[in-house]
Image 1 (cartoon, rainbow, N blue to C red):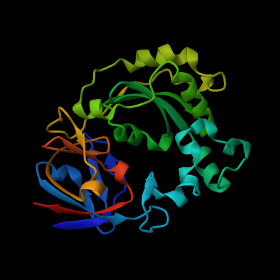
Image 2 (cartoon, rainbow, N blue to C red; image 1 turned 30 degrees about the horizontal axis):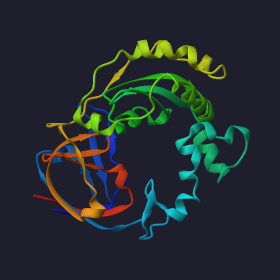
Image 3 (cartoon, one colour; image 1 turned 120 degrees about the horizontal axis):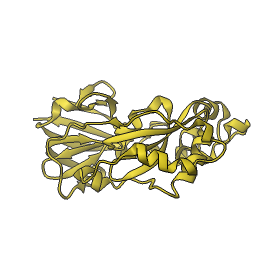
Length: 264
């Protein structure tokens, strides 16, 4: 069976284990069902997720001209503290910015390679945690806009990490942490504007991934450079496909690449 399409991040469903779905133009693959199967990937071309042109991907699945133009790639996406829609100030497209920024946001702790702080829209819980490969997570505050979440994250990351070590995450070289204790310890650093939104009564969310074999020394697969690759799928974690030979493929990191996928 041969499938083809432009890569976008895998869709997920909260279950035990997490269910993964790869959505292509005309196909819908439950990736869990492909575990233990041999997959052949072939790079075909680029396709910008905004303009659909065959232009080199710059970041986040967009070509360079789109990346510096569209609101979906503005600086406030990666740095929520730069959000200005709550002030009625436009960055690139105020209608879009209000739609995204002026909705409930969560500041959370997640443990994937270590305990880290992060921000996501409330509607993206627990999807954001799954995408990061976190095996446990907890909400700290729920605020009404992205700006408040951003300044809270900035304050807290002086006292806890804000990055994931992808190799450590994929090796499953992680320890369970008491995130309730972490949350309570960090409360004192929440900015005054957000402290009233502190969540004091919730518990950790545990996440289980469909992995049969973790790599000891994960090696990233660059399908654009190598053009093709064949391997047996043994796991899915975060947005990674994990293969038996310890190669790992970051689907989200390759958004905008058109590939063919064959099974044997």
